[in-house]
Amino acid sequence: MRTNFLSRLARRLSALTAAAAVSMTAAAGAASANDTFLGRLHTVREIASTVPANGDVNPYGTAVVRHDAGKLRRGNVLVSNFNNSQNQQGTGTTLVQISPRGTARLFAQIDPAHLPGPCPGGVGLTTALSILPGGWVVVGSLPTADGTSATAQAGCLLILDSHGRVRETLAGHGINGPWDMTAASHGDWTDLFVTNVLNGTVAGGGNEVDGGTVLRIALKLHGNQPPERVRTTTIGSDFAERTDPDALVVGPTGVGLARDGALFVADTVKNRITVIPDALSRESSAGTGPVVSSGGRLNGPLGLAIAPNGHILTVNGGDGNIVETIPSSGRQVAFRQLDNSGSPPGAGALFGLAVDLDRDAVYFVDDATNFLNVLE
Image 1: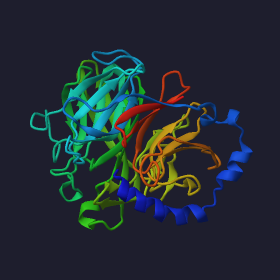
Image 2: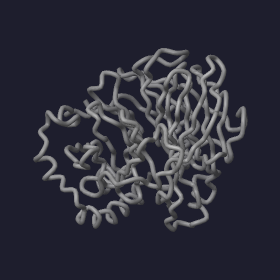
Image 3: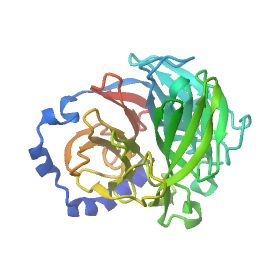
């Protein structure tokens, strides 16, 4: 996200915020700090730069390593870069692994000319990033030829082994600009939940189109062999999306799966959080799903994660805040400013976030500084 676009986004969203039914003041009064996840976190700390030797910038995806495997080390954080060293969006090719103490190492640098399968348009690594059992890493690609939305293509999901080698690509069957992702594994099976933001957006020429989707992609794990795609189901649709000269594309972004199988989606254009019920089992689209919360402290929600207490965490593209929302009521019960650079403060700085292994802190990438940070 670029800051001049988000300055405009923040102004547009202010009208929605003023009219929103959710009152942050009332919500905060109804929940004490001890009832919230964010209420126990007070310090933002820089961990390490996300810029590798080739100069890639604009960190997007964030995933915590849960088990040692190959080059992956438990407790470290994997970060994907969306831009190259010339700051062209949709051209970043690197994944960086960062330890909680600040040691950063290149995990993978992907060569678009040497992929094991199709990936229409090449490589531009997005917020869609998950680590599966066995150390398989899945990352989304929404590529461009020159950093502009006019050259954006469908891309794919890239599957890397635990040593950072691309072993497989997943393209087509509804994958069209994979933007964010979460995963749920059970035995030898994994379900990927992937948002897609290029369904009619380039043809729309900057006009809003309601073509954004959420896919559930069932994968069968086969030990040392790459996972096998078994089935793709569209479980969410009709999300607002559009291209933008500064932000490349705006559409449904963060997704988080609750324990009861509900999938929460950050509907960025509409400035709200929606929910897709029965995401693990449904066989048809829920559309955008019911609205959980809108307006209030939400200001262009991008990254989304589920807190240990079951609440929804979202980071704003418009003001650099993280917001905590109760799923059952839609009440926004806490917020913190994570970034105050830019104009307005924090605009365009935040994307991916992930709760740490100890479940008492949250990692986030700061696009304004190209750093991995932690709120603890």
